[in-house]
Image 1: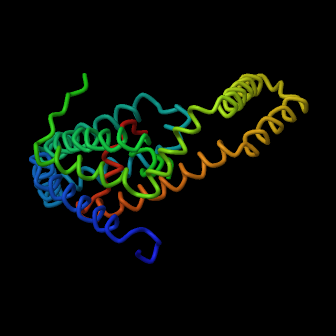
Image 2: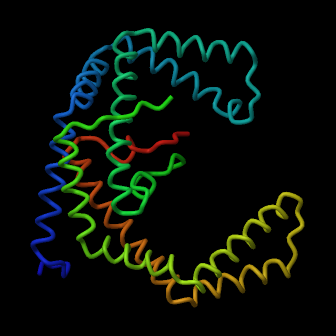
Length: 130
Length: 126
């Protein structure tokens, strides 16, 4: 028995199978693409600047967005800054790679959820409100 | 349209091993047993159905500010029935244990990946 009272062989099984699954995920083409896109995006200074500009503007009008009181000009400016940000090739590649990675992780989580009869992502994820 | 994902043989194998290991653990197997008992217990199911109905009724009344003291007493009474039912209590406790265990597994997976696996797996985003 280990310190948690669980038979040692089961703890080892879990550790080994967790490592095996994580390794398979890391070796997937989706992870490879996402990892490369992440590095490329973070190295793109102009794209990061565009992101900061978008985030700063979005932050400045956050209350208005919550109460749906944006002026047409503010709405247009928000959209313009978003389009400017996503126009960078490193950003569009990152977003595409992220979408594929999310789809892969959802498919994997679905298998675990069905085995455990619990929604894995809901059980383990942080709520979107923090 | 959702893309139907084809998992690689390595991932299929990894997921199969992980799933088999998970359901063999005390926390998950205990939860599955408690779930089975909960689903097949007529009294427990009846109480939960009643609780669900009372809660739905209250949510409706809340929109028009019509919740009475009697409504709240009915809610408390049904909640107490649920709390005092051993099958329901055991199921909820087992569920919490299983969720806590899966969170630990997710932390391990995420550490190996270098990113939060559960966050990427979440379907609906704000």
